[in-house]
Length: 272
Image 1 (spheres, one colour):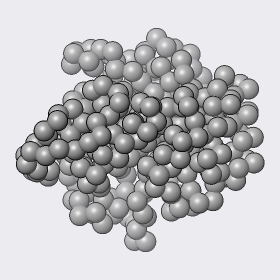
Image 2: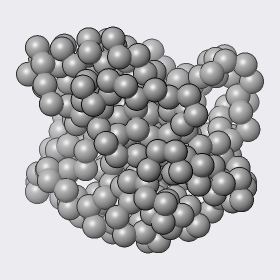
Image 3: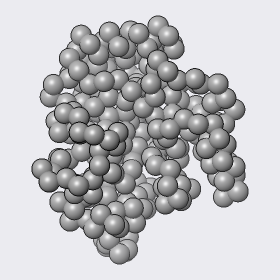
Image 4: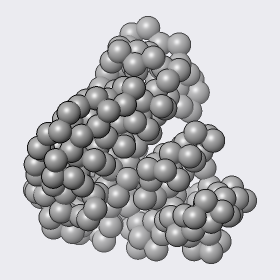
């Protein structure tokens, strides 16, 4: 089993150029960086953990800028969006960014995706929040065309482009692995239809077993699972390998360099 971290990159936390080498020095396999383009001042969507929305949500650095710096300062670390919000993004630009990250990193990109919890954020991008899952599915299908076809063409309800050329193509074949977040019925269908791995932020074995059985029925029995945003102090990994978990990505509180490095030391001492 591999071990990575999930860390919000902000203007107030450890710099990406310091983070990447620190992770490799300690033996971590991967890093996942969350994305928010902005946080609307008027917000009705509840925060993921309830209560007030933590400060770091408001201050995120662009995810692909962050991962590019991490790519430039490391050699083996896997570089993941955790998660990106493609429903809010232009699919042509995003396909190029993902492929470019994969190229400059030597094939280390992971494209973690989700529909997003903040409905007001989606609305500011011109997306009907009620349809953001369908928009995401179509944009993922369109990006797959761009990554895998020399002359890509797509005609859908939300994405429409005539034959076009778009380079670079990803180093990883057929494209960087798409890690799908979420556990709703729609998210699991997205995993089946568009995903190469599952990101799950709740950790009960019964759900893992249920989804593993369902994926087998759908002809996708070998989809790997990543336990995402886990508490390194309280997690019990018993049974994870049995249900196909191949990575645990631990949550690290965003903070100043000294605090983050101390937390990485503690996690590495216990788990690596």
